[in-house]
Amino acid sequence: MGSSYELYRRMYETIAALVDVKHVRHLTNLIWISVGMLRSKSIALSKIANAIPGDSDAESRVTEIRRWLTTPNINIWRLYTENGLDLRYWQGLKVEGQ
Image 1: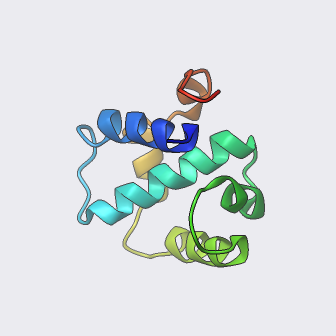
Image 2: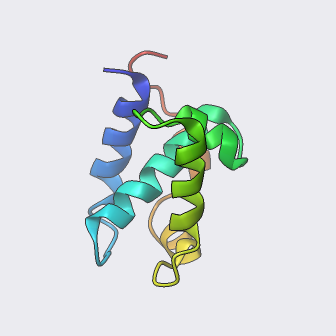
């Protein structure tokens, strides 16, 4: 298992207990985007997309990320600020494969 999956797992275990979301998929996407930001050390969508594991190409992942970030019923800022997604904490976390 790659370190991206390990980081995702650890973030999900911690954050899922703190977040009240309508659909679990919203939380899943938020955490994968966060993993991409941490792995790429960037906020550029193209770099985030390249750091997220998956079968689709990076361009498709950029489109998916952009679409998710602009979904009107998701308050990204609230999810980020109120639910333990301060990436400064997760940035220093050591995970398997690093």
